[in-house]
Image (tube, rainbow, N blue to C red; front, side, top):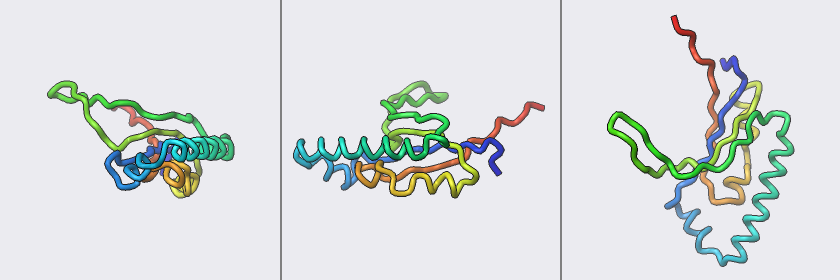
Length: 122
């Protein structure tokens, strides 16, 4: 159960995937045309779901990993995020079916997970 009713959607993409390589190999004019088409589709998706979008989020930049050994630059598959409200995990996931992130852009997938309440200190 998700008492908050909110879900974090993470947009993933492998920078070394065949899909990304094919995207980068496109002639610039073709890629720009797809980028424009993709952004129109992404904005249309946001408009359709605006009542359920808690935070639109956005693209993610370079990653710093902080641990007990210090701070280091790393690379990962995280590309962007959005926070949505939904009645169930299935309803949240359904919002992202055929999303432009992977139906137009060379992204791999969107992962959706519940945002849980922080437990009380006892």
